Image (cartoon, rainbow, N blue to C red):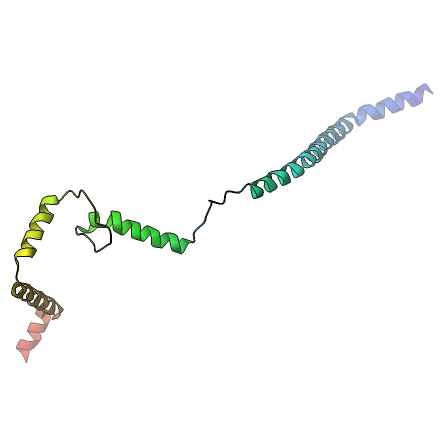
Length: 151
């Protein structure tokens, strides 16, 4: 019988590292599964309660707008408040900006427009049309003039 004990001890000693690794893996897996079960037992009911609480106490003031409505609002806001800073001229909008930095320039423009007669305005419009029609006429290039001389 003592020989059997010795053989068993030798076998245990031989497989001791493998058995210890298996025991550690089982211990870690059991701890993980226990944490998972406890977390699910607490988390699922708590999550449902929080979700239902938020749904019942949702503020009725929370309103959402579509991106199209927001874009329209932002474009109008930009035109009303900032566009004249970048274009250098006031735009025809419902709101007029107060306290502009070029107050003297606006006053001078108002005085000149009040003093002009209808004839001056029509002359001014005609000269603007002539300038635009001249701009649309293509200019001749040196190649074109060379071809005309050869003919």
